[in-house]
Image (cartoon, rainbow, N blue to C red; front, side, top):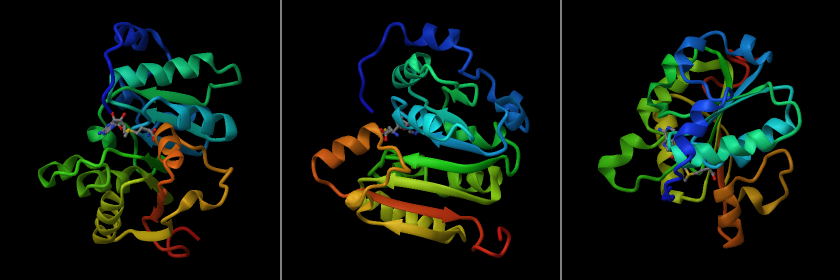
Length: 219
Ligand SMILES: C[S@@+](CC[C@H](N)C(=O)[O-])C[C@H]1O[C@@H](n2cnc3c(N)ncnc32)[C@H](O)[C@@H]1O
């Protein structure tokens, strides 16, 4: 995401308690800290529309947003500070998700959301894709047995790649759509990027993967 530098971003992020400076120190303690039994994690949450609005819509869950870019992270956290309702069930990590498995204990997360992840079209950059094997191996560790990955994208190549990567890792494609917004989905918030693609009339691809088939470990 190309964005102009915000001179206030770094200091602002340091001052906000919602931003967890040492996520590894909370490993295994996130549920207790957020006072919620079920945790959702959004990786690459950009300017935070999804993170803040889903947390408002589903206050019974804990919501953790991750964003490595300081400038967009600061805009997401500013959105959070302006939210008036109860928000003790939200936290933010301003870091690269490549060390994800050191932040969370095994099975600590219920749902991971990947919304409009960067497509990294050049082959040599595929390892940076959030649906690359390197990331999938970490998702397998931190997700509960009946947990899932929910992914949305406008990019058909990334979608195809992701289907194959999860398949190769032995995951189960639980649900998918190649035009998710053809019908209303009030249960799922529209992200900033999603909004732009919908305005252009582009279809939204969506998939849900589970680690195990239904009824095996997660009945
Ligand atoms: C294309 S934007 C989409 C933003 C938002 N999810 C949306 O749908 O509007 C992708 C975001 O993911 C972030 N990102 C990409 N790789 C990441 C990583 N490894 N760790 C944390 N954030 C990452 C980027 O900085 C960028 O802000």
